Length: 486
Image (cartoon, rainbow, N blue to C red; front, side):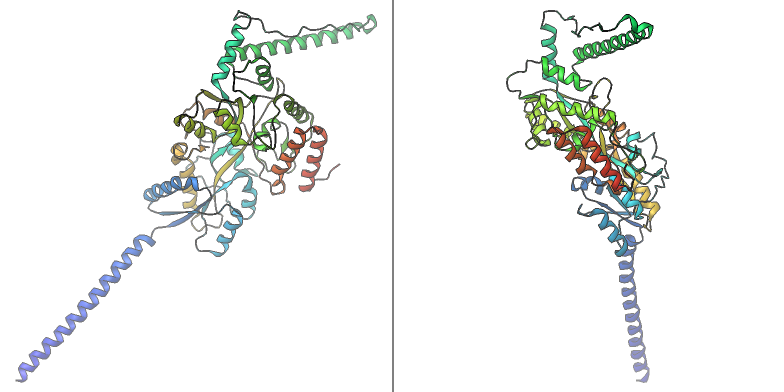
């Protein structure tokens, strides 16, 4: 009996031990499975990427997945409000465990970001931040005091869009106007100076001869330019556009030769961009300011005179309305930004565009005054306080370099990377304009320049004096930069 009780006791004890072991094994297994599930998620290094344009969501999410799979890391994109963007990045950096390790930022905010420690000099492990991958305009945009503080991603600048059908019609008119395709271009004949006297001597004769030679060279240049215009129809200068305006018997329905958003500085800056210097090519040099000069005044005077030819209502003509007028065949030329490529493609696909169109670089102001567009580059900066700075830098280079090849196809935005965009007759002119563009200044002290310039052009369009307006702007900018005026 005792033996029986002992056997039963032993069996019970064995059962209890087995139950304990089984329970322990179950708990350990469950915990292990839970831990394993977490470790697969948490063991990976993670970086956060901020951006404020919802049109980029699909592209950035796919880039995050591709980079994550390639490097066995997690990239967590976060779409945030563009309001007080840099301030929000700074606040998250100071107070959140999920600070942005890298983020998308406009080039004109880079001084503010860099001085706050939120934009570090790029590591550029793969060596892409150079002229082999990016144009001079792109590299200037992300340069601050000789340091590359971001990777160029995509850009906006201006180009001239035209109705190709109308220009071909104009060329035909010119060819048949007098019944001869080889009609001589009429250039005003020179008039000799009859006021000289024998007392002027050889010096006077030499001066007259020099002036005549210069006049002949100018006339030859003008004749060659107009002959080229009559061959291609593509204007090289504002004078060419005015020549077309004066000689084109426009078809019914055309309301004007040229119309653009004269109230927006983005579409006007090309007029003065080559001569009005605010911070130099990189937009960060406080001592490199030259706003009021002879060439800039001359450019503005020509711009002011355009109001007599085109009668554009600054309060009524918007960018969208000008593009729609081009689509509807109401105008021949307009000034547009990079978004027009996708917009015209869509209009063509939807059957809204019944004309052929073309895009070319902005015309020069005259034979002697060059144009130069302003550009805005959206770049990827790496947070200087990031705990994963190297990884964030690698993702920034990946996003703006090798992964940017399908950026236009998926978003309609033109990548800054030279080889990222397909060869395209409508994209190429924007890239050419961007390469020689002047990036909008990144100095904090000139952050209101955009508004000041719009005010200047508005007053100029309404007839005020160019020189006085430039002097006022120059004094204001120098005061903001702490430069003595006088």
